[in-house]
Amino acid sequence: MMPDLGKYAVTVLSSYGVTLVLLAGLVALSWARHQRVRRALQQAEARTGREG
Image (cartoon, rainbow, N blue to C red):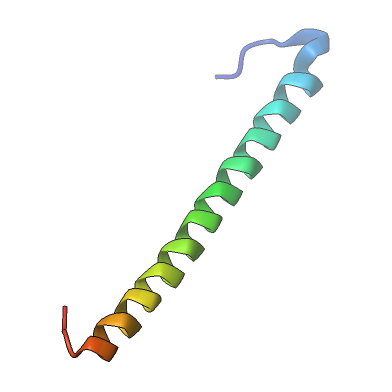
C-alpha cells in the first residue's frame, strides 16, 4: 500500500531510511547508557552495603 511518489520516490524513501537509522542509533545509545548507569548504581549500593 505504497503511494505513488513519482520522481520524489528516492528522496522520500531515503529520508525514511535515514530517519530509521538515526532512531535505531538513539535507542542503542540510550540502552547502553541505561546499562552503564544501572551497573554504576549496583556498584555504589554494594559499597554502601545496601541491596536493591
